[in-house]
Length: 365
Image (cartoon, rainbow, N blue to C red):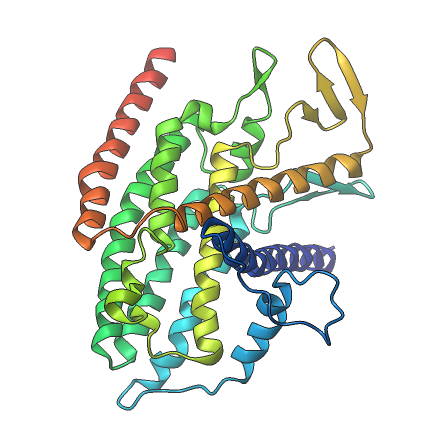
């Protein structure tokens, strides 16, 4: 029984890892082609396989040509750099992002042979605390990447990144507390299941209905945590060349790039779980669809599970695409504006949201 449990856990972990990594790669392609559409240009479209691809949409550029280039590119370490920290920093940036997704449920339960398998890598009663703890570790990759490079531009990028990430983690954490107060639990699977009913039998009771302000604060703080436009001050190419990863090449640079997109996936996954019903599908229950008016469409258990996983994936992808649209729509803030937004606006709003939520809960209770 122990070996079976370990095997199931390994399969779930592998599935989630593939989801994050593959969606990160797809998002890189979506960003390239999406930005090209926004800017009225073609975008990546050069690489082809002997000219036999029927539609050259730039997929080979992003998913084949670029990885081969980065894998075979020479790894340069600048003179005077701390070689050990220079080597570890990219992986310290990626690892916390990947393990954060372990607490995010991507489905309810899959029953096989009478055994219920929770579709969540780590079923934690304190899942949100785990998410906050793991996401905060990503700061080390940014700081060490800047420090170890022996470059003033990289060091400035690392300092900017540390200040920015710490500032917005506070607002993001307080926004999550509002959601925790509304649902009364830190367990993310329990939060997902709590969003399965409907207001007036029609409107899905998703977290964004309970906590609209918390969602906005979380989304803004989450985008700032990913260090992407309009919050890309740690790697502002017009000021710091490439910021904290200026002195990185090859797969180390690819690891930093992967961490940015993986962070976008994690932010989208958290937003979908806490505010958009996670794997919930409107009117879909464990035995099938229950529509208003008493109309019931029975479905096999496996079909229900597949629909839940597809629903979660589509929600995450839609929120990721939204982040890309923001990336190519808004200009970069000045650094003082970034700090002002975090400390003078988001933090007070998050505190006010907690206060109002507490008053409402006490009043109802």
